[in-house]
Amino acid sequence: MSSLVDPFVLSILVLNFLLLGTSRISAAIQGSALQGVALGILLVLIHGDPAPRPVIVGVVAIFIKGALIPGMLRRALRDAALRREVEPLVSYLTSLLLGAAATGAAIWFASTLPVAPAHALLVPCSFATILTGFILLTTRRKAITQVVGYLVLENGVFAFGLTLHEVMPFLVELGVLLDLLVGIFVFGLVINAIRRELSSLDVTELDKLRD
Figure 1 (cartoon, one colour):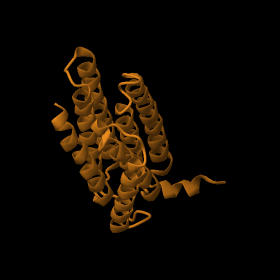
Figure 2 (cartoon, one colour; figure 1 turned 60 degrees about the horizontal axis):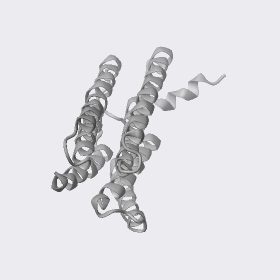
Figure 3 (cartoon, helix red, strand yellow; figure 1 turned 90 degrees about the horizontal axis):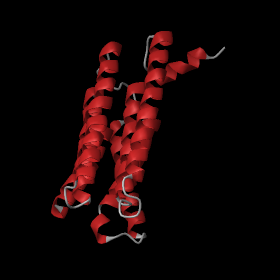
Figure 4 (cartoon, rainbow, N blue to C red; figure 1 turned 120 degrees about the vertical axis):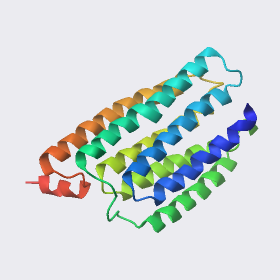
């Protein structure tokens, strides 16, 4: 099963670039959902034998990250009648270049750490995913896309937690899932408030709320 870890890790990295390069909000939501599914499967693969506990936690992670939260975002997307991220703060080409630089920096930084061979790709992948989420959070205007950025950032934290399963089994994973749920509900409240007050999900419109 360990031979299957690297392909799933690489798929997460590829999805990072898809998220940075797409203007379609529905595609961004789908990309974050696929990352969640890959992470849930990775949780089981990294633990080796398919024991009940990692399988159950993996299934829960897949449901929350791959179905529940993306479903909430798709509903918000339909209610807001949005399709694309228009005029991001930086161009999509620049976002891809920033993502490539972040991935290179993550690989370099991970090479300086005493990482076990089994986690040789997972550690730089987790750092690169965290930085990808940060780029999405800071360079996109639409609140839904920023929620996707937060999801991607949490996916990176989740991936790094997988490297600690031997020291703190399930503690980090379950803690991240709880933080993720709380964060998404908070973002949901923010999205509803913005839509109710401004009839828009463009965060630059928040300036209109000032006295």
